[in-house]
Image (cartoon, rainbow, N blue to C red; front, side, top):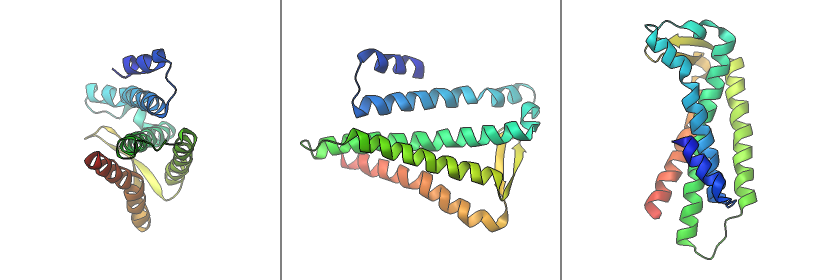
Length: 167
């Protein structure tokens, strides 16, 4: 479905903020879906770790997977807020450059957080329940991880919800 939606947004030729954010969201969702293949293979092999036994793959998979999830949340928040502003303040034009700049800054910040979290103060574990790799933080960095999750996941989700209620 994401490829068809992306194809639609590309074929319309629209370059407004909503179309760009929808396209970015479609690309992220497609990559997230594709990124589930190692998990699916592990499911069909009786939850045997397979490629998740490789520490380098596990780290790369973890960083990319969770980056994309959080990035998609922020993209949806930007889309929701821009639509709310258009409804509540019909004569106010949301600056496309600034919105996309904030998305780029968020992406860089998120990559730094994900990569440094993967390199320092943690270890990867394989969860057969999932099955997938997960970064298990050291006990002393648990507060930082909780703060980061609240900042990067909860705040955009709450802003999106408030935007939905307002509009």
